Every structure is written in structure tokens, then in C-alpha cells.
Amino acid sequence: MKITDFFKQHKIVLQNKRLLVAASAGPDSMALLDMLVNLQREFGFTVFAAHFDHQLRSDSSTETEILQKYCAQNKVELFTGKWNKEEQPQLGIEAAARDARYLFLTNLAYAKQMDYLLTAHHGDDLLENILLKLIRSGNPEEMNSLQSVGKMHDITLLRPLLAYSKQELVEYDQKHRINYVVDSTNQEDETMRNRLRHHVIPLLKKENSNLLINALRFSKKMIQLTELVNEQVADIGQVEPFLGAWRVKTDKLINLSATEKNIFWQKIIWQKYHRRVNENLGTFAVVDYQGYSYLLKNKPEKAIQPFKVALDQPFAFKGKSYLLTTERQATLTEVGNFWLEKNSNFTAGSLIPGKKLILKNGERVKAKKKFAENTVPFALRLRCIAIYAENEPVFVEKCYQKQDFIPAGKRYFLYVS
Image 1 (cartoon, helix red, strand yellow):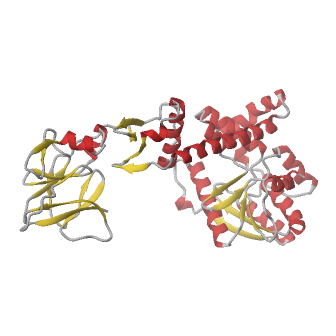
Image 2 (image 1 turned 45 degrees about the vertical axis):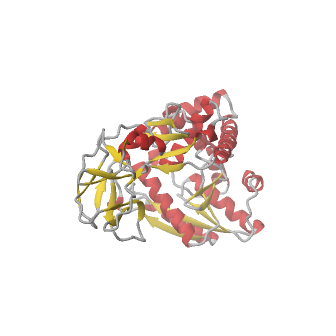
Image 3 (image 1 turned 135 degrees about the horizontal axis):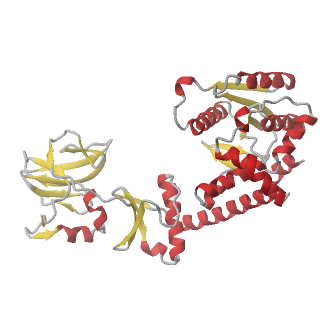
């Protein structure tokens, strides 16, 4: 039986485990639920079912009724939930419905201390997913989103039916006389998935009867290759945040080819921004400067003209909240500090082009020299907040602070929340 092969191949421990099945009352999930019910005594686990009613069709209550009847007959505990009408958006309802369903399932699995959450995705679903991703983006990593074993909100997610075809599951239900509901919207051609299902995939199956086997093989190989890339990225080390960008020492990338560096940054963009990009990195750019490689959002920075700020009063700069004070703040992150006479008039903003900074010996130095000394690339300099006292720069983030001790003065601290 393919489902038992799945548990053996993936070394899934079943003894004394609690398995929660995401059940829609469709032919796929009913087949999965019944298979597990028949296996639980042999393998020593307990099956539970969970059903989420999206309330998008007038007959959706029929699904709950079928599940209630099946679970009562087979002594399976059933948990149910509903998607309230007021929570349903006008646009993007399909994606929102999926998110609402998985939130319900993962919260339930956590609350009921389930060991595994199982869904009834099968080989046809996998093939459809691969073709959809090929059409929409061509990004290989997106094509293996239906993994046999994965994680969702820290819950182990299992898809034990990927080796089955849709037809096999329907035949299983018919053989075992299991009632199920057919979603009428699956018969329509409004979505791309349905058009592929009704018109494209049947033609491909005529060309090769082993098409689903090849799809599963492709998915497994993509997972292996992705894991290998992830290991290589991990070996390079962590990137560090810097002025709203991310950077890594350039020598850590020195042994990578241009293509490998590009793949590295694609992985970082996915990790940090949860966005898939291709070779051009989309709206991002990489800049090498003073021994570091910086990942930047490829958007020109605008200078913020200096504006008045009051001591101990929060103010905003580049979307962040700051506080200038003479008192240490244990709950805020310190940006820097400087010494100054009491009762100064402060302003804050970007560093005005051409401004020079006063050194401890009284000489003045161009700001670009201090930026360069502190490895701040030109593209990030306008992100550095500058504090002025009587129109004189006394602090510039990452590169300058007026530190000459003044006996009658005060030490000022700049914090960001």
C-alpha cells in the first residue's frame, strides 16, 4: 500500500502519535481519512479529523454532515470551524480562504497537541502546482512547494498521498463505499488550475502514462537541490542588518562564481523579504564597498531636510521613531551619543551635502571621509540620521559623534524604538 510506503520511506514514527487529518469531505480527504482509520490499530496511532467550512457555497453544510456521519461510525473525533462572512474579503478570496483554513488547522493542531497535520494533496495536485509555477514565474524553488514532509507554523505537515492519482483515490472511495462531496466549482474553467486540470493535463497524460511519477521524481530532486543550496548559503554565514540594508563581508563570497553569488542573494531576499526574484534580483541591488557586499532595495533615497526636535519627545525619521534624551533608556536601542553644552536648539534630518564635521582637535573633515572610514556606501548615507545643534552637526549615525568632554555640558543619547 503506497501510504504505508510513505511512512517507511520518510521514517515517520507513528506509535502513540496523534494524527490530525484536514478533511474537506471531498474524495481525496475521505480516502486519506479512511486509509488512516484502517491503519491506526496496526501502527498504534490515533486519528482525528478537522473540517473548516468556508461558507462560500450554499450547500457547504453537506460536507460537515458527511464527515459527522463517517466519524461517528468509525469513532473518530471531529473538530469543526467556520469562516465568518464578515472576515471574507471582496478580492483575493481564494488565497484568503486557504490562509484562514491553515490558520484554523495549525492552531487546532497546536491546541490539541497533535504530532502531525496531514493533508490529502495527491499526484495530480503536485503536477498542477508545478505547471502553474512554470507558467507564472519559472522559479524552480516555487515548484516544490507541495513537499511530502514540511513545517507550517511549527507543526509537522505530512502529504502522504503524492504517489496517488486523483483517479486512484476516487476508485478507493467507490470500492469501500465511502460517501464524499464533489465541489461544483472544480468543474468550472474560470481559474487557471481548472483549465490545466480539464484540458492540458489529460493531453500530457496521453503522451506519457507515467507523468505523475515523473512529477513526483522532479519534486524530490528539486527538494534535494534546494537543500544543497541552503547548506552552501548557511556555510557562508549570516548577513547582518545595516541601515535598513543587509551586508556580508565580501571575502566570504570570494570563492563563488557570479552565478553562485546571484543565487546567494536570491536566497537572502527570500529569507529577509519573503519575495521570489530571478537573476535580475527584481527591485533589489547589490553594492560592493570597503570590504562588504550590501543588499539594497533598489530605490533612490531622498534627503530629509533638518527639522526641529525637542528633548525627551519622540520624533520620526525615515519611518522610525527616535528619542533624544540625557537619560539612559533600558527599553530602547541606542543609536549613539555625544557631548554638548546645555540648552541647545536641536534639529534632525539627513546630513546636508557639503557639511564638514568638527574633529576633537578643532579641525574640520569632509563627511564623505568619515562615511568611507566606517564602510557606509554612498547609497546608504541618506539613511543615516544626523543631529544638529545650532545648525552644526554633532552626531551622524554610524560615522560621527561629538565626543570632546565638556565639564559644564551634558551627554546626550539618541535611541530608536
